[in-house]
Length: 388
Image (cartoon, rainbow, N blue to C red):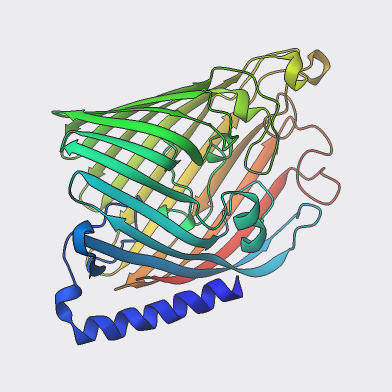
């Protein structure tokens, strides 16, 4: 990770010198990937390279670190720690019939209610130094085909901290996949955007997941999205990136997004279903009906914003009847609140975060603390960085 950081620092220095020497390398064209919900904004003038027959190549990236304090730590986790949260470079071609996106570097993926994996372990255990990237065929502005390591269609939150309203991912995100290998077709017609994907779900290397999403733009301020997916064949793979039960689930989400002035409001519903299967050691179905509300207020002309996330997730099933444990024990539920005051000045940003998780109807040994018996966890996180 130290080598990654040194490389990125050298790259940033080179970028600044090169840009000052030749202003023609700058562009106002938006960089489409990676996706970002705000409040953080990407560099509006990414480095542009002339790449011969490939055309214009855009290079951007992020460097950030976080400091975290938490109560009721999991075994092996730390109460207080500092880590690199992002050290990534993005290289992409965004026009023409043939396009591509490459994401390279290290990262951690902090999530509330779950152990924190430091960036070295997270990078190695989840998606590697090349977490996302694809080749894109775009024969028209309405149709495109993507092949490679793709971002999930599911949910209202992206994978990496800089992409989202909050530093940490939420309880609902913990039930979703993040990156998959496969193919995806996108098609837009008027206000309707459709996507269909065939992939390996929770990064399992077993290509038996089918995904679909439909997003309807009601008007310039309101959108409504429906996403569904499911594993077509039971698999018994279990790794850090491939949780056994979730990788054999079906998922559904309904997401409404409203923007009005300085406000962004995103309420959404999510439901997952894990069918019973002797192959994965379960004899009863289980579900996770859940709901969340994301709210962000941006103070005009100040660089300050205040994102808030509220969540509730419930699970069904009984341990005595052989249901899978999808949260803090079969039949458990949890709620959370996360507040993330944020400030961005040009390409630099800093944000603090308070999060609190309350678990109920738990199974002893499956919750927080060294013995897994504590029902609450509080975290304070500070993240600083630069989007170059």
